[in-house]
Amino acid sequence: MMQETLLAFEKVSLSYGGIQALRNITFQIPKGEIVTILGANGAGKTSCLRAISGLVPLKAGTVRYKNEAISAWSSKKTHLVAGLGIAHVPEGRGIFPELSIDENLDLGAWLQKDPQVIAKNRERVFHLFPRLKERQFQAGGTLSGGEQQMLAIGRALMASPELLLLDEPSLGLAPQIIHLIFKIVQEVNASGTTVVLVEQNAHLALQIAHRGIVLETGELTLVDEAKNLLNNPKIREAYLGNS
Amino acid sequence: MTEFIQHIVNGLSFGAIYALIALGYTMVYGILQFINFAHGDIFMIGAYIGYYAGNALGLNDHPSIWGFFVVLLLSMVTSGVIGFLVEFLAYRPLRKAPRINVLITAVGVSLFFEFGAQMLFGANPKAFPHLVDVSKSFYIGGVQIDSMELVVFTVTILLMLALEFVLYRTKVGKAMRAVSHDHNVALLLGIPVNMIISITFVLGSAMAAAAGILVGMSYPKLEPLMGVMFGLKAFVAAVFGGIGNVRGAVVGALIMGVSEQLIVSYGVPTFRDAFAFALLIVVLIFRPKGLFGKTLAEKV
Image (cartoon, rainbow over all chains, first blue to last red; front, side, top):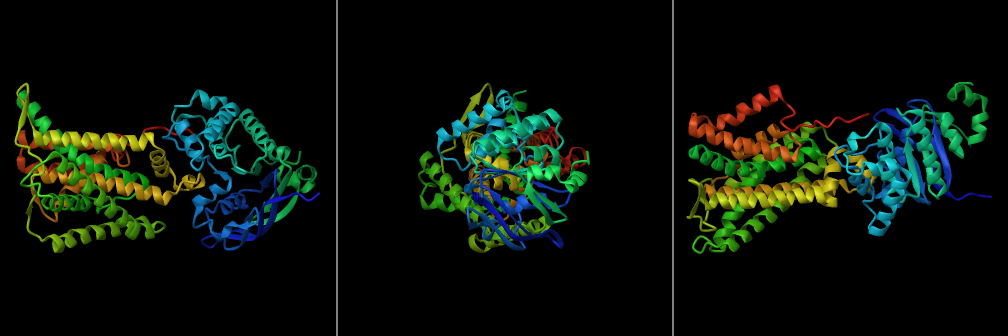
């Protein structure tokens, strides 16, 4: 059975100044899956997400979303990418520390005009993360790291995204919080949202992902189903601590 | 004691005007991290628009409170448009350039306005028309409050409440605060950052124009370089309050207005202008982030 492709990279290259971050990358993200992008520091994982959102212009190649070549305009009109149903939770969470949790969530719904949908999404976020509801009126900056990550994901969900991009959601968090967040990512995916998950923690990521993409210094080295990657001796050695 | 309170009241009315200008500096800094040195000149232009509009409406001979509001609104709207154009034409093309380039451009825009105004309006001082009848004074327990001071307080308080409402109660205000924290994250949420920046310039310029009208009415002498000293002092007030902090700018400006008044009354009147710069030096040495600089600890 052929799966519908939601997002595709076609020979994408990208560089910052003289430093090439992605070289000739091609892959597809099937609709409805969790796809994890793995790789060491500086392999180009974050750059892939930035290329999708249009935060950096491509040097060559095309990013297609639902068959539209969005990379043709996405770096010039970055704020329009969110309107396609793409929500990007950036590295370091990117919450607004001076704004309350409520206000952070409101801004996640910036493009959502229907107040009923906003109310429904807010309820869903509070259902997924009851802790955010308790602290609704507190400034975002007073939250713990884990709560900030919850807020960042919750804010992204306020836009009812079709494609959710998560950049290192586990960074700097305690194991039980990471498990909680990964469980929620699975729930979100089960309700129909496609997820691209960039992770350092390859073991955890492959456990919830359907598919994995492995990058090495800007080049694509492997694309496979997650369960195959978990058993792949090379991957075990390089990213899973050879256990 | 009555005399002291009198000086405080007079100082507050001066400070309120500084505050209107300081808000524009601090909002633009908050959102773009640069000092818009042309801001004081928008204040001057606002005053001149008030001069021409007031005379055109014949308010000098028939002062009226409604006429005053028409002039105020006209000046605020026109200056808002000028502020929008300054950002759009001069600063937006430099959005990705080093900050020093934008700063130098701002100085250039400032000079353009100052000498453009000399060309357009003439270098000789002009007498601002009487927009409202402000000959009456009121007394509260021996403290005299002029009608003009009453006008200043009413207008500044209304404008500040309006700004407070926009910033903290509206979607656009939330977006302005979000953009001032991080442009990229705001973009990822679909917030049109450039539009939010434009709105910031429009609001700041309109507030400065209102200050221009109030200064014109209080000290009815207009000249093309009047924005320099007022602009600098408002800038110092914004730094004093914590640049980028809206409430800080208001508090800083009020303290500055009162201090100036006290220096003139009890100290050395000729040091009035020196005070602002002494304050700037002291703040920069001992508390560079100002009174209300970011104190919220961000957990990582």
